[in-house]
Length: 69
Image (cartoon, rainbow, N blue to C red; front, side, top):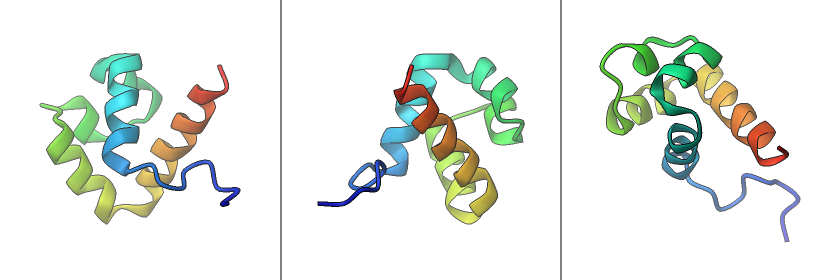
């Protein structure tokens, strides 16, 4: 059993749940990246996050914080 709370959770699931919880506008305020602010979509955001480790880390950390609330 993994101690990693992200184990088995896909990036798409994380992003989808964050968008459902916050919406694109608030997500773009919480994490200032263009793919959340300009014509956002799950597909384009996933492509960016998969290529950009620092942004992915911010998204994963926000997801983990949102689980605790």
